[in-house]
Length: 115
Image (cartoon, rainbow, N blue to C red; front, top):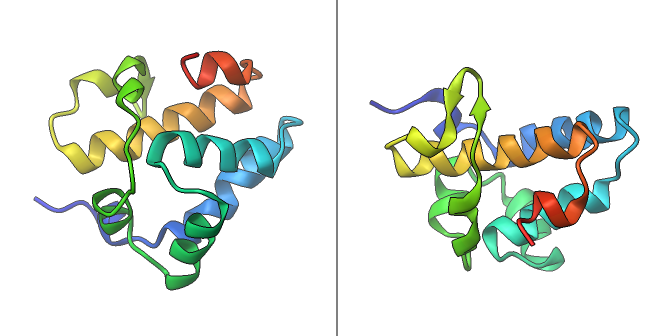
Protein backbone atom coordinates (compact mmCIF):
# COMPACT_ATOMS: atom_id res chain seq x y z
CA UNK A 1 0.00 0.00 0.00
CA UNK A 2 1.41 3.36 -1.00
CA UNK A 3 0.79 6.28 1.33
CA UNK A 4 -0.06 9.72 -0.03
CA UNK A 5 3.02 11.21 1.64
CA UNK A 6 5.22 9.07 -0.64
CA UNK A 7 4.09 11.05 -3.69
CA UNK A 8 4.13 14.41 -1.90
CA UNK A 9 6.99 16.71 -2.87
CA UNK A 10 9.54 17.38 -0.15
CA UNK A 11 9.60 21.01 -1.31
CA UNK A 12 5.91 21.39 -0.40
CA UNK A 13 6.51 20.25 3.21
CA UNK A 14 9.98 21.72 3.77
CA UNK A 15 8.68 25.28 4.43
CA UNK A 16 6.33 23.83 7.06
CA UNK A 17 9.29 22.21 8.83
CA UNK A 18 11.10 25.56 8.77
CA UNK A 19 8.00 27.44 10.04
CA UNK A 20 7.53 24.93 12.87
CA UNK A 21 11.15 25.40 13.94
CA UNK A 22 11.06 29.19 13.64
CA UNK A 23 7.84 29.45 15.68
CA UNK A 24 9.81 27.85 18.50
CA UNK A 25 12.84 30.14 18.11
CA UNK A 26 14.92 27.73 16.03
CA UNK A 27 16.41 28.40 12.60
CA UNK A 28 16.21 27.27 8.99
CA UNK A 29 19.92 26.45 9.26
CA UNK A 30 19.12 23.97 12.03
CA UNK A 31 16.40 22.35 9.90
CA UNK A 32 18.92 22.07 7.05
CA UNK A 33 21.48 20.56 9.41
CA UNK A 34 18.95 17.86 10.33
CA UNK A 35 18.31 17.13 6.63
CA UNK A 36 22.08 16.98 5.97
CA UNK A 37 22.74 14.69 8.94
CA UNK A 38 19.88 12.32 8.13
CA UNK A 39 20.36 12.02 4.36
CA UNK A 40 23.96 12.89 3.57
CA UNK A 41 22.90 15.82 1.38
CA UNK A 42 24.98 18.97 1.46
CA UNK A 43 23.48 22.44 0.99
CA UNK A 44 23.83 22.30 -2.79
CA UNK A 45 22.37 18.82 -3.32
CA UNK A 46 19.50 19.48 -0.89
CA UNK A 47 18.62 22.70 -2.73
CA UNK A 48 18.76 20.83 -6.05
CA UNK A 49 16.42 18.09 -4.78
CA UNK A 50 13.95 20.66 -3.44
CA UNK A 51 14.08 22.55 -6.76
CA UNK A 52 13.17 19.43 -8.75
CA UNK A 53 10.04 18.79 -6.70
CA UNK A 54 11.29 15.32 -5.70
CA UNK A 55 8.76 13.14 -3.86
CA UNK A 56 9.45 11.91 -0.34
CA UNK A 57 9.79 8.36 -1.66
CA UNK A 58 12.42 9.29 -4.26
CA UNK A 59 14.14 11.71 -1.87
CA UNK A 60 14.92 8.94 0.59
CA UNK A 61 15.64 6.31 -2.06
CA UNK A 62 18.17 8.67 -3.70
CA UNK A 63 19.66 10.03 -0.46
CA UNK A 64 23.45 10.15 -0.83
CA UNK A 65 24.25 8.55 2.55
CA UNK A 66 21.54 7.77 5.08
CA UNK A 67 23.13 8.22 8.49
CA UNK A 68 23.57 4.86 10.24
CA UNK A 69 22.95 6.59 13.59
CA UNK A 70 19.37 7.33 12.52
CA UNK A 71 18.53 3.91 13.97
CA UNK A 72 19.10 5.49 17.41
CA UNK A 73 15.99 7.65 16.87
CA UNK A 74 13.25 6.41 19.17
CA UNK A 75 9.86 7.69 20.20
CA UNK A 76 6.37 8.41 18.98
CA UNK A 77 5.35 10.43 15.94
CA UNK A 78 1.69 10.62 14.91
CA UNK A 79 0.88 8.00 17.54
CA UNK A 80 3.31 5.44 16.13
CA UNK A 81 6.67 4.34 17.56
CA UNK A 82 9.20 5.15 14.83
CA UNK A 83 11.42 2.18 15.69
CA UNK A 84 8.49 -0.18 15.01
CA UNK A 85 7.64 1.10 11.51
CA UNK A 86 8.34 -1.72 9.06
CA UNK A 87 8.09 0.14 5.73
CA UNK A 88 11.52 1.62 4.99
CA UNK A 89 10.39 4.86 3.33
CA UNK A 90 7.73 5.57 5.96
CA UNK A 91 10.30 4.98 8.73
CA UNK A 92 12.70 7.47 7.08
CA UNK A 93 9.92 10.07 6.80
CA UNK A 94 9.00 9.57 10.45
CA UNK A 95 12.66 9.82 11.50
CA UNK A 96 12.70 13.24 9.84
CA UNK A 97 9.43 14.22 11.53
CA UNK A 98 10.75 13.12 14.92
CA UNK A 99 13.96 15.14 14.53
CA UNK A 100 12.02 18.26 13.54
CA UNK A 101 9.70 17.72 16.55
CA UNK A 102 12.74 17.48 18.84
CA UNK A 103 14.13 20.70 17.35
CA UNK A 104 10.83 22.50 17.92
CA UNK A 105 10.73 21.23 21.50
CA UNK A 106 14.04 22.94 22.21
CA UNK A 107 16.31 19.92 22.34
CA UNK A 108 20.03 20.64 21.84
CA UNK A 109 21.38 19.90 18.35
CA UNK A 110 23.99 17.42 19.63
CA UNK A 111 21.18 15.41 21.24
CA UNK A 112 18.98 15.65 18.12
CA UNK A 113 21.84 14.45 15.94
CA UNK A 114 22.60 11.61 18.35
CA UNK A 115 26.15 12.86 19.03
